[in-house]
Length: 239
Image (tube, rainbow, N blue to C red; front, top):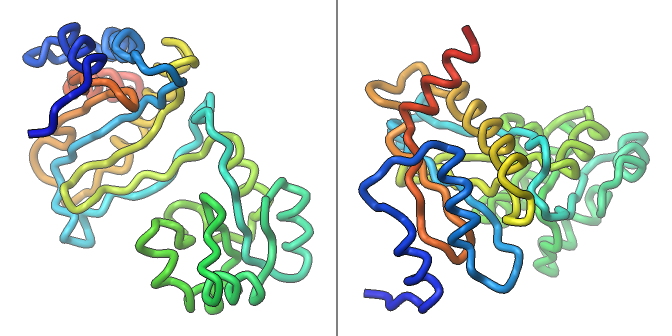
């Protein structure tokens, strides 16, 4: 069993493992248990009641967090013609077409965090799918990264758009900001993300959808949030 550091052990004493915390309490506790000397990232892990082996139970999408993630993301855009200029003016870090695909193929260049492509470039980008796919960098219509609305896509990503996708263990992992954001901003980002995940519930999913929700900082312990309370709040908000 992995031995935890002294800071982690001290932080763990503040958390009641048997309790399901209210979202506000959980976020306040995440900040209290973040003992590292750097500005830790706050992350959410949501275990869903879906079977990702079935196509009709996939949960995937993207959402713009109102306060961003606290991290500047490098964006590459695969486009041609006027869309190249549009991407540059929108703030894309790298813009190109065939030459960028060849650079990735021949040099293994992957100095970016998000890839956007116009639909007419997907035939070319598809050639590097085996490289981009495993790293989660392949443009996808469901996440809004395959689009002719290049300006909108780039600006949203730069403003704090995050992608979410259920993994093989039926868990979604998403960062929602930095400890330095404070309770209010972290709570707003958290609520926005959870509303989106609940909205994305597949029709084929049976039984309890939110199985568990855990908040944690980069180096801190996990803090369980009451999933039913989240469902009730968001459902009542819609009514």
